[in-house]
Image 1: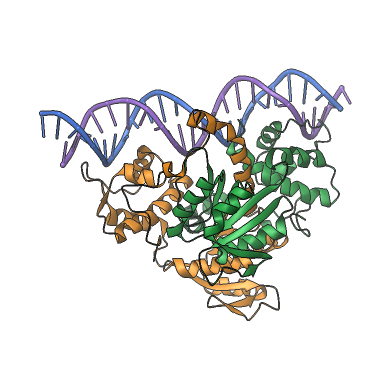
Image 2: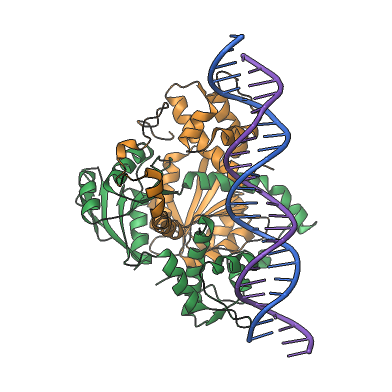
Length: 238
Length: 238
DNA sequence: TAGATTGTTAATCGATTAACAATC
DNA sequence: TAGATTGTTAATCGATTAACAATC
């Protein structure tokens, strides 16, 4: 019932709201949140409708209430246990990222099939053999997995994850994987993202002439860095 | 005129087509490509329309022709020069990733503001001070940047990149950035992607009962791993 | 009060899917 | 020919935006 796009935006709102909370902000207006995400106030209000919270027609929304309401929707009540498969550069980066960013996510184990990596500890997690994957996932009832393997291993690994009971996969491998309809896969494709940037920056080259109407050089001081809300000087979370 | 979504899919098609090409496949049907990306044949044909190539009503599309046509749209004719800012775990992972995956992308330089990192070489690239950023970008006419800094630095760095003439930014920092309308930003948010997976896997829990109509356990062998096209045994590129 | 903001419905926009004539 | 596929247009679907009464 709640759309994927809305879930995505709620996640972003929460992080920005936590920054506001930490800087002592009590209330925010929909147009302020909109500015932070370069969106519209109408969309923010529509998204917040899903939360069931009610704003104040003059003061806006209570920041702490929004954070709590978003958490109620996004977070697993008892914390999310995740496994990571593929301890290459990207896998290690994600492990470090998880460590720094979350009390909400608990890394149960990291797996690889390279004998040189198995047994080594990175970011506090000991790398285990993929042969142990199914056992760990089933024993600990892990429902979420992160796949950071090379392309050729992604489908095989995903099949095993699904067989072991995984319900959601974050696929960071450079290839799509196929899963049964009751498993949710979120694909993040860095190669595609990069190609998209170069392609669309190039295709939108004509736009600048229309937008800036004659002036060939856009001064960086025009970039909208002066917000009414503080966005700098603090990490997005913890 | 060509939509963002289509560009994204073309990028994915190309990588899958290169796998096919390497395995000796000469022609593909729209429904085969559709199966590889878990999409529909109609959408594939609609996307391919943009290329101006014409398929054969009985044999399908010539793989090599598709790859060439997609490259014509996506790639910068003389290769894409990129800079990367923020040489943390993620930055290093992306550097390694770029090294392995692309002849099309050339990393001009990597930057950080940590004195301990400056001067060190990673994945063949020497880390330079961010103070040199503008000079390098302008001197080499770099148009594309990858931002892998912490949240608190992302806006500041982006402002400098834009001022130096960058036209496209891949933002991997855990916060949105604001740029003038003539600069294209592609945001990849790992934290949001992960939260989306856990949330949507949980919200879609009811679906499985409908889909599998009574059978409580979905066997992994049902997962659609048996394709008519080979998808395993080869890296996606190079 | 006057002005600004919320909550929600209606209008718009864009993207996906269905359909089908043309082709081989 | 009969059957399958392409290329493209029309229909559908979903998401975003605009609008505005209710509220403070």
